[in-house]
Length: 132
Image (cartoon, rainbow, N blue to C red; front, side):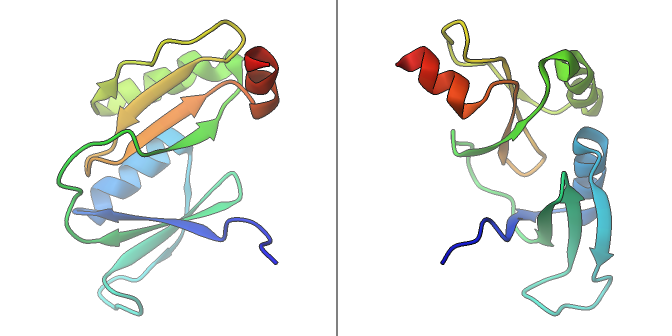
């Protein structure tokens, strides 16, 4: 039986740059760094973001950008705080898709390796009620 998501893994060109990205935007806590050792495929770091295990491993960046993304839930009142954090890193933003009222707001942005992230203020229940 599936109990939930164990972890998410992102392949990154530069572990140090990725650590700054995760810690600056998501207030990620680094809980492990392999250093020069490799127990998995390559050197890696583990982080916790709101209790979720995030793994970053060295490798080639994604060759292209797509709409495949991971969305993190944030509070509406924190939207501008997160927007400032993202803008402070100088990463590329994706224009938000058009929304209907009641869906919440979103910030879409890429990391340094072409992974797309979303910070979203809405919930599934709110979206389903709005679409209903």
